[in-house]
Image (cartoon, rainbow, N blue to C red; front, side):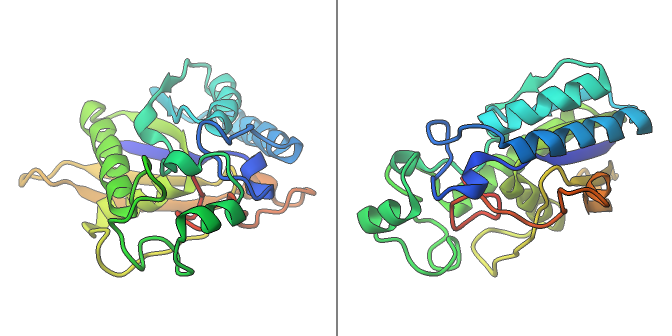
Length: 230
């Protein structure tokens, strides 16, 4: 099967110091909407033969998914498990407020203690990888021999590499620089042993932004990690 993971367009948490969970996420910026329009035009022109469309339920992903849905002419299946790392009580706080209240480490989350929650009621880095990896594995299992598109987050893109490479979240941290509306394409083949074989066909392809006033450069949400922020 073919799995296309698309990161959302530039969001308000990308450009403000607000932690963007369900409470703090105000959706896309005007730049993010333009990026998503260009993505829609690209997908429409390429006629991607998608058979399923999934999206995270966070507002920035929902909004981006509307553009993708129009391009592919298919409805969106929203999936809570494709959300970015859940920040818990810190949702909606500024980074400064989060550090002051919860005394987080200066190191990126997961490098110091992968089992420590982002804040009370939130996820740890290790827990997030399990949840996001399981969501991707479920989609792959449910749609053999299909072409699936999922609008998600930088952290979920990271989780796809941990899943494909069989890496746990308790060892060395793997970091990425995901682009807004960048497209990552995985191929998955079933093998006799049952584990399957992953092939990375394309990573972080934002060629639809080339030559525009919307440069394809990594912009992170206002959260130290994962790479897309919470």
